[in-house]
Length: 437
Image 1: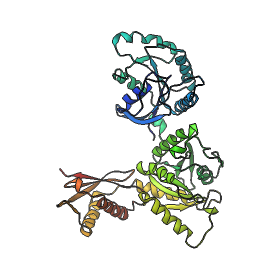
Image 2: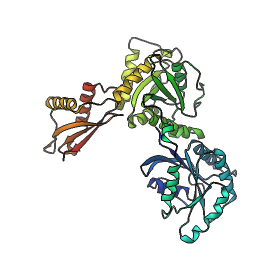
Image 3: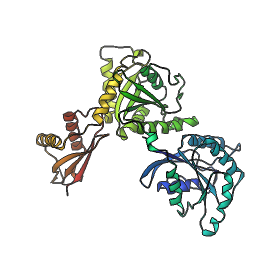
Image 4: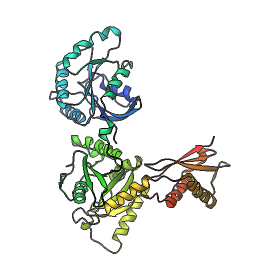
């Protein structure tokens, strides 16, 4: 399930970026006393009282025709549309301005929960000036000081109180969720339609047709329930010209977070691009089960070793996805699409496997006997025992005498042994070396 999303909205120069930096605990956003410094949305993760959430910093909303102001306004409106909770920032020093009234009207029409923050309330005397902000019609104004960090406890309490009910956001545990990611125009929406046999999402030759992550529940003949999440294509940052494209990148990343399995889609016609590696890296870093789909395979002229050569190329270009199965498919002819649910089931099962400690340590002992632990600077690594501490993805703690002696190559060796012994194919494995107390 994706974290709740909080958008920080307001007119220019009210201190939105300062408040954003305070919430995330880092100076990520540019802070400068000049309107229009923050032009695009900036995303970051934060936590309050055990609640994880993501925060969007936006440029100041204006309604004039100055350069970039229309683009900034559109970016802010996209953030409003995406957010679960909105923090509207105003400034006590200027009071309510016409721009504040216009921004408040947009937020009222969004029907989203809004928390009203009155910034630059640096001393007790200024707190008496916040009451006029009731006139915005957005509820109780909360005095804060972004520069001094005052009032943020009350502000974040109000934000967290407006988060959606987790029970309403989550699917049942027995429903397998998977999404399709990839560059624009590799055929993700066509694959969604072909898999479920319906025209449930827009399919177009125009790049970037799919704007949102679309949930498509369906059931196979054996009674297994799935939710398939289609996402907009992810483009290289330097090529993101369309305003909504950056928004689509975050939707895709959130779809990955919500998924158990990720289908990474390649275009057989255009081949492997550098951007494919970055896109698929999102899913790998998230620890998701991964299947590589090579779409439009029907358009490729076949020779004796065409499929084998393409697979070798994938393995060479995506070495970090050495565990991921590869399936050559066609949305147009529905070639091999019937295999996808079966493969998703297998990946999901492997990702959720839990191994008994006794069996795990038997395999570990055999591995150590066949390939003794290496030494470093005259000191030998000693491996004592291992235990599985998590699933999704399978995570193992290996207790050793000194974690610094665990070379990445030996860690990879243990990973491969665990993978082979317990059928952990199709899923990343995390190994954490830890000193035995």
